[in-house]
Length: 258
Picture 1 (cartoon, rainbow, N blue to C red):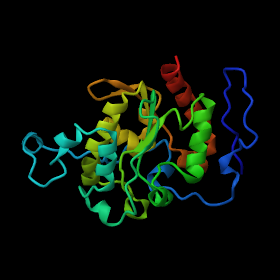
Picture 2 (tube, rainbow, N blue to C red):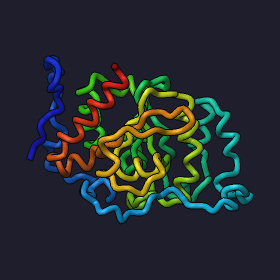
Picture 3 (cartoon, rainbow, N blue to C red):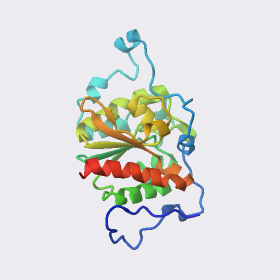
């Protein structure tokens, strides 16, 4: 089963490179976290990874917890931040990972793409969104006049969870200062959150992806516009939802390139 390549429908079609093809045409199975394979019509009985703290717990972090050093991270510049991710021991994931996966792309990008966590190949190569899912993401970006050299791509987690399981609350909390600093340094015009886990944790919501799609949300003190869409690995499994994802992409394009 092949997928229809990502092509603009509302503008004259541009000539595409000869090697532009559907990355889902291979018969190889898709290796993806379980969360990206969940159907869009989830009943909402999912648990957001953002930890829920009482007012007292939030006000007085314990020494040695992931919150220690957050102020230091918030003042880091790019190279120091990348080094801190590679040397990070803020959660147990550093014990099983090959390396930290910091992010790639234009550090002054108008569009920031945030996924869930590194998979096995990302952990090996140290780059987010590689393999078949990454190839499909490239086609999606091309369809809205973007590519990896113009956007920035990162994940909620910088270390791979064992067996590609969903991130845990303490792991998300440990990585959150790194992501917050990346967003502050980039100051993008828009954020595209792909997949349920990325969307829920970025927005602090337990709503299913289907409830979060279709509207603009906002993140952080700059109220950066956030659009939620499907993870490319999910689209490889359910190509019938590519039309919905295309609507998400057009909304992002209107902000980034409008």
